[in-house]
Length: 297
Figure 1 (spheres, rainbow, N blue to C red):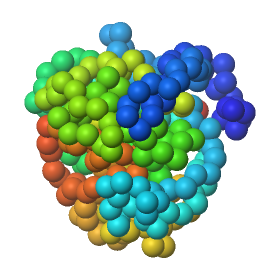
Figure 2 (spheres, one colour):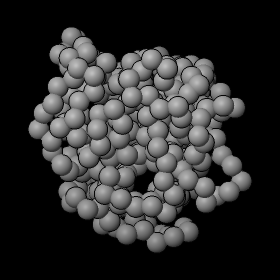
Figure 3 (tube, rainbow, N blue to C red):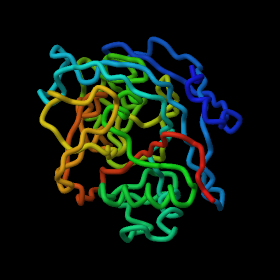
Figure 4 (spheres, helix red, strand yellow):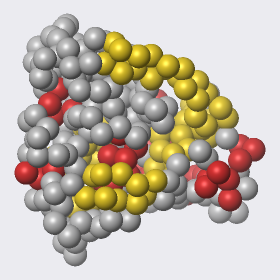
């Protein structure tokens, strides 16, 4: 599965980890639970703070949602085949502890508040960060490590979230509160209601991942993507790259839903947009690395 990723000489740096992958039926009943394996690279920030970066194999997938999917929006189509090259992505959203360390590194282009989050907790995802803040975070981390860290393209994000599935969620046909942090007062399809947490939770708290070994892809915090917003996928790239325009102030894309949004908004294909300077208590980030080879001198 990871052979394509072994060409840059870092195979010995990858560590195998195990995780549970759960599938549910349309009523939210668990139909399978399997133990799976993936590989990751620990990016050591010092003081015991590590970002786990997971190896994602290349492949092709149908981006967007079929017209028959419940709660689908027109901006999720037309579905189109996209080929994605291998890359690495964070196992979890960036936490507040990780953010604080990187915010303490030398400034590249803009100031970063080391403690911006509304909901406090070292293991909780950082929130109240703008797209511009996320770009600065990636720039500082890249300078510190010698590796090229960035935000995922919209195609990379959805490919990573789906992890080979074509259902509304990587869990299956619906979402249930035991598996994700969202507004569980509301339901998707025939799925169940549950206790609405009304705040972020520590990353990975639900203890289930998708088939790639990624946690919190549905709910907890929205995650910035690099792309500019487009109203639909007409003429979208088919190579997994970010879809950009000349206007740098144009709205940017977010995916994943959050702790305060309905489950339908947490679907793999659901997309929304905000101005790049917007900060909110439901917005965070997850980072990507194209190669783990370091250019640090």
